[in-house]
Image (cartoon, rainbow, N blue to C red; front, side, top):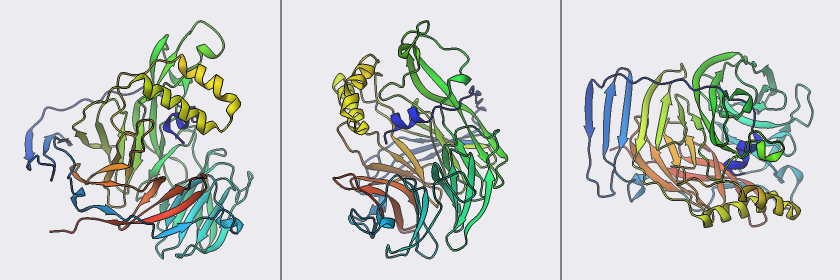
Length: 421
């Protein structure tokens, strides 16, 4: 699903952003390397408890020692096989410590456990509102080998062990937020939610372009509030006729709109409002410790880009009868001057940040730039076609792939990290 459609389906919560005040820089550190494509130039500016990292060069041409296998090491899924192998609506996957694979199959409201060779072992859950049932399950993280599966429909997290089944249930406090859009789970077991859109929290709306606000908050294992990371800029939207009635007076998310992105690693929360190439880095306590920046040359949006975008939305709807309404709806919306700086954020088990190049319509940009724990650009990889990653481990990348018939598969590819020294 495109980020545009994800925002549309997650209309729920917003709040007003707080202003971050920078202290006067007390030191300036340079970490420079030749700008020949082999390694980036990095400038670090240190202020009181905050480091601003400026990546001035380009990603290393050779990938910096990072590489992803061309073929998957494991593929789980089938078109006509046994029912547990038929996947639909995969909403997360995790590789357990012994090599087994846990898959949240939202289509059947189940968590399915597979052997390291892909053989189905056991399934947990079923549709419903009971303590061992799901309505809208999404994997939001893991603690050791226990899965944290959030059910957005029932505002709760199920703790599920692959051998013991359902261990316990925790209702997420309303203080954390209404629509539980997970960004990940810290190493201490706290889960981050946020990024949703809610017209009710916007103080002033005007005709034309607007920008909402959102928030990111973490919950403790018992579901209570842990940390509020502050109010953030949310998604851009457009209002044609505020005084009118009907569809034109409703908020519309424009093509290629800027919006919030976040991901949580064991030790950090990474956030960007995509206003420019800048990513804020927070500890689980809520302290902002770093700002990562990178060189960015904005790409202009053309009318042809807009047309391709609309046709992609039409194709995703899988209902030809809706095509005229969709084309009319988007045809009345403006286009931004340029594309956002990137498409997605992910983090790995070693606190590296992965940033995906922006995907223009008609192109499948599968390139990701990798930044180390200190915010320096260290590598670049191109992921396989028709594959979206869920989890980046020490030596693997696990995610969902699909074939030419849009049949879903959980696939794992090998990952090579650069050798020390």
